[in-house]
Length: 335
Length: 232
Image (cartoon, rainbow over all chains, first blue to last red; front, side, top):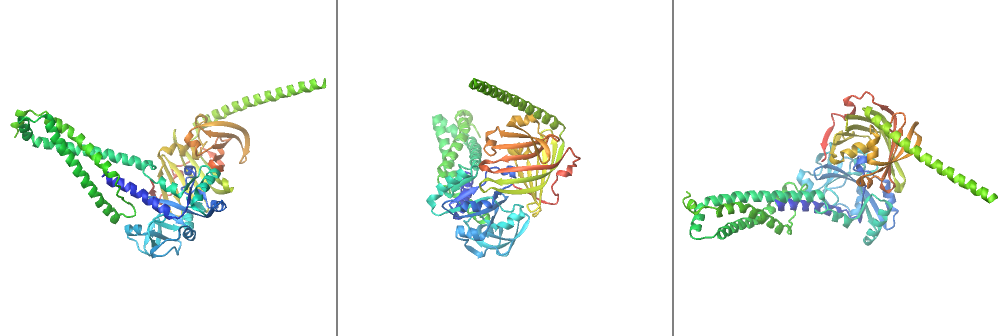
């Protein structure tokens, strides 16, 4: 459970970082955190694009509008020609770019998950869209619509959620960012590397808390399961424990036996758990490839193993104490 | 002789100016207290309001203004809770409503209402978006450092201009200052100016303000037939 959920957290963030890098921009500009006052997710003016184009070293600027669709999904509004100039263009698996105002382009994973083909219709934001093309995943978003159409539909003409900048030489990106931060305090301006580095578990507080909760639950579940299993084992082996004690086995010897068995269960459980993560990975890849992405996070294998061993050993304490405290005569007469 | 007369006159002038300054400061201090107590009294009887609204969003670095216009209805649903509906019309038509901890945004062209649980930002949303409506003076004083900039005529209304600096550091990070023009007639804002970092601001001007008009429960409703989407 730990490995699967950690894998999904890493996978989802890495996928988002990969798509952000796929845009081909050097700098990303996001609005100040004052959307609550504006009650809008796209509060930046398109007029800013001309301002950015006048900045030293900036060779290109384009903006997108992002409309959340619930869950992990979102619909991105793009000016296709401008975006192609920035990113080098989408690589279409099927179909092509927008032809009509109600066209959307979807990536191959989204198309597979929603069973979409070119010409299919899809209902997003209570609006019917037609799929004009399916592109290779890894660029900006899973679903893209025409920017001006999305702006009109949401009553936000000339408004943007995010602006991407290209500079003449990537090493200049940091100096451009510093300059823009001075000119536009409050705006979130990052080099693309900085932005991608923000998409990590430690930077996303919600995911960090989520993983903490998962680990807590896993320890409690492991503790309870092992307590039940070992307690049952001790009960079932009452006579054997009595015989061992009659033959002179010490409390330490009996505890040693029980803890070794617990350790074995924990290690086998960890190995089975690791193997099962490949199963869940396969399942997600085939059932919900656009929604959930699971990665194999090798550095979490020993962590998950340690958590499983600690939980199991904690769970074995009470059954062990019960076994040690058994009266030899009563244990021998136990049916 | 002439020099000593000049020096005496200068001393008297400085003394008079200092005295006037002191008197003025005392006078402003009194009138701020007076405004607060008037707002306290007005808040007690405040049940709701309707007004026309015109919001100008200024982007500092490009010196660009964008304007939205519409109507606003505010209602006090309980002593601690204000509900509102802002209805923007025209090209950028949309409606924004706050009910408890749910912020609803209605997109007429999509016939969709998107619902956001604003959770811990509920108070901020209530007290910031319609700052000054039914708000007691003591609440303003508790949340902001208030400077009284004197009487001004705004939107054809005699009003008092208050300058508010948020006390909470987390609010101050996003909102450097708010200017509030409170009508002397209605004790509600005729204009609010939110100063955002980077030279941007958002100016909301209210017209045709009606205090405690008959407001049926449905006055703050968004279209019932619209599709609702829960966003978080």
